[in-house]
Length: 324
Length: 95
Ligand SMILES: Cc1ncc(C[n+]2csc(CCOP(=O)(O)OP(=O)(O)O)c2C)c(N)n1
Ligand code: SF4
Ligand code: SF4
Ligand code: SF4
Image 1: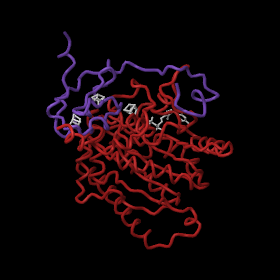
Image 2: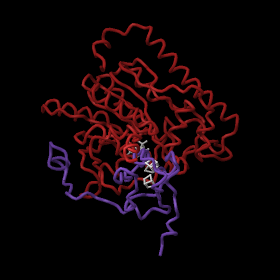
Image 3: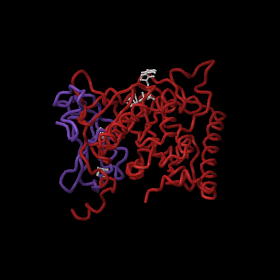
């Protein structure tokens, strides 16, 4: 009996080779996607990573309070305007000092897509050898759930409320992952928490690829508090985001896009939106607009992956090599 | 103590103390995950999806949450493929 049980153990456990460097009781909301991601990264990559990040929901825990810390990792807290520049400084210092380690620049979508995008873009152009991870909770959560560039069409936030004049965000969401892949950096990928083996593989690939330069991971991490979702649904939300193509899973080596999970029969986007209150007010017409956007982005991604295979990579990109 | 091998603690600039901060997050809980050991097929999905990673392997038979820190989010119960975990109101356990 015991042997039979052993055989069913999920393979994800095999990726968790290292200790959890965080103390058990840390101040994230119940069901927070960010907390799962943050504990997962060092368990897969090792505890010798150096993290740098900005004011956000991750900062109170990563930075610590007064003279005490919530974890045993090295963390360098910096400004929203300069996250990637700070990571550049760190990685160059470690190179000069002959220290072989992994620098992870860990930020919310507000920093990555909006306030700190300039230096993220610069680091990608210079191909700085570190891993940038953006956890996407689709808004500025720590300051009270304001809209960001990755907030989707229709979603209510405190700056895009639902009322007589405003009907949630009236702009489309920006595709941060695709934007970064277009820079032809050694590795770009999207990931989410329902597919943890996929996330672990991508983290390990990024660790390898960062030897050749800049790596970017865009991780979809639900925020039950800000989205008005049941904390128990966090993983289900990620799963439905993938199954509706709302958040497709792909990776790109040197900008060559490859789907890592294809959904045979994508579900309509309302199977995803109905899981949270931020979309509650949306009419059928609103859903058509959102569905249109999701379909367009997915079609573009598919088209690019076919085109990329046909196009000859320029020599300047080929020189970066590929992950075996 | 830090497992980091470059610095004794967080960094030369840091004055972080040795003991880690820890909040009594078990106190936030309004519902408690209770595992039916017979239904559990020992797949570990509850353990990998628990955001605070407090669902522990108990021998080679079942998994159980550390109630000192479990926040009661209910993810483990939702994700269990066998429905072996039930969320029960904390009120039931007050004697
Ligand atoms: C330049 C600058 N503008 C505004 C702020 C205020 N601020 C602190 S945290 C935060 C929200 C960060 O959002 P995000 O990066 O998406 O992380 P999240 O809170 O969602 O985890 C903001 C706007 C700041 N610290 N610096
Ligand atoms: S507000 Fe959202 S992102 Fe921030 S800790 Fe709470 S659940 Fe996590
Ligand atoms: S998810 Fe359910 S069946 Fe699997 S180990 Fe946990 S309690 Fe057991
Ligand atoms: S209820 Fe939430 S915090 Fe508690 S053990 Fe389950 S998943 Fe973990």
